[in-house]
Length: 222
Image (cartoon, rainbow, N blue to C red):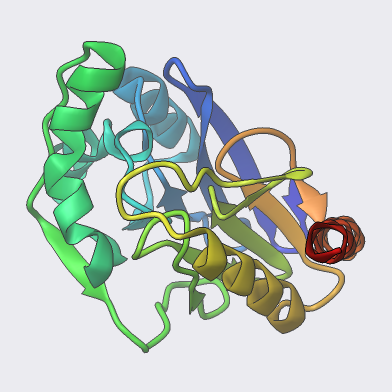
């Protein structure tokens, strides 16, 4: 998919069809990789097909289905990756969860850098990092050039799970509201699973969910 100066390649990976994204800045050919979750052979092939000018590897969060191919990619290109500090513990536990949920063995790279309050810089637009706790403590959204990668915070007409360790439903609701108020309305949202949609459509859908929740609380108080 082409959006302005960017081409976004979606690579569905693993049992949960997690969306790994490879973003090409068309004028320079530089690449950003988002959430290499599984099937490292598919991800490495996609990078090679794009010219191998990989500049950044970033994680929206550290659940096992989003990090399973990180080690292979980092070792192949001798690179580090970025994640939020509040998801480091979850990253370290990812092999345990992969074994428990999928009976699958994964290895985790320790070659990471922590996302702070500063933006990330590459050949394309500066990447703005929004901290969105709720699905996990260190969930983030990456925004640049009219596109945003929301991880599992907000999917297409669905919100991320809050029944897993480190999740918080109240925080997730606040994060979704904050994200939709912060991002420009024309932004195209690329979620961790499923199809992309716009901030405008997401805002309308979220307002309906919020109104339904308010009505339910009011009826419960009667």
